[in-house]
Image 1: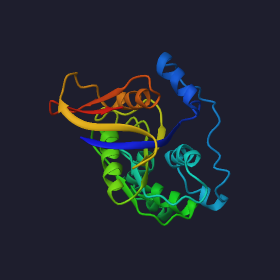
Image 2: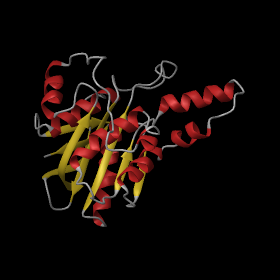
Image 3: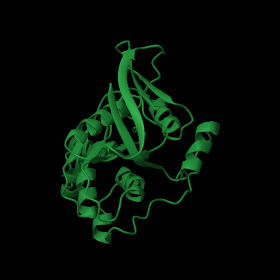
Length: 238
């Protein structure tokens, strides 16, 4: 069992920008408005702001409110597919024998968002970018929690976006893009425990991971379950 504390957390997608709004969405599962204001990133210089893609902007909006202005903190950035829209556009350019945009290529790598975030905050702390084919949330928390052995606090950002239509037959994805930021701590915050156990529920797929974590963070339940394809599940408990 792996134990850690969460000092603070925040989640963002346009239309769900507070704990109250996320709680309402969990209860009613309503369709999000398409005309909700997009993140402005007003505290980031314009030239740097332009380099953030959609999920990068969502990551910033999720993380900034839970960090002090000059706080230096290691970062774990986790995304199953990364900026898949940008990656697909590059692959289509290759297929069409078109030259690749150097800027787009540099922003499509998996650690681009964590790098831009570090530059924006002038924070030279270490940053780790990870992916997972399933159970991204438990693996992101495992990575962040184990880094507490060497650090008092670690920022964990988890972000996802729907797959392009071309890829949807081959993998599941969330219904809308989102980012969740959590500050894991050795000493401050609510205590959580993460463990693996024989599975007691059927496989839920990737779409429910967001709901499981949000219900846990909002204290709607004391346990979140993340089934795997190996007859075991990850369990996070308060």
